[in-house]
Image (cartoon, rainbow, N blue to C red; front, side):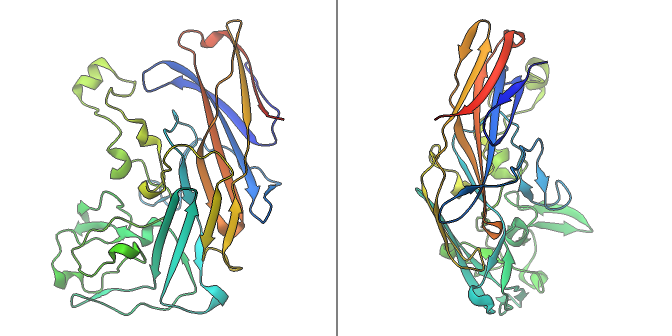
Length: 330
């Protein structure tokens, strides 16, 4: 049985499956876990690569906590931040801004305490000291009639504040989002702002589903079980659209985070890691390049995850792979 020789201190795995063009491809994946601090250090426990999406609650009915690492590769880096916001000194507030900056990416979200619609007006926000940054607290949701979904906010069907076909009087007592975009705050019950979050997007939500391709009768008869010809690899980017990096992160980029840890602001630089791969196939050595595809920041735990991927097209030579090795550059 083919073995992966991993000489790095990180978690690593490999998988063989057809790419988007239906060509057999060997994928090499590495996930590194670091402690965030003035000088980053390697975490004692290295988080494993995930074979399937992990949800906060019931799959399909809640938002994603961690997205799967097993796929065909991304065209650019994803940035995902998880955890609760913290008010400085633990003092109660009614609103708070949380920010994340990495290299060319800058994103702010305004947090409000619980609010509801009252006669077409927004109630006063309730005070809070912490707030989970999950899509369930962002704009979205579904409009139910007799317990059946009539319409849904396809960008975030698990959120709150979506009016659907409701009239203003029907919205009395309905919760508003806790997370909003500072440049487009909700003022009317029928607004449909872009959901604001730092977390991962589920595959069936519209910002990703639009890239999934067409699965019609033509695909069924001429292409299945492979991906349709109009499939777009942007489907594999799980980050909020604002947090899909323009290209791949390289390591060394400055990171700044506010109001995501009780001790205050967090500032550090991404670790710069150079990975090497060697794949022996049909008496030839392939050395595919790794791309840093996913950054998972968990400020509450001062934990950072980085996932890289490399790919080797095998076509009909998959059985001729004799050795696979992953190492760090010296």
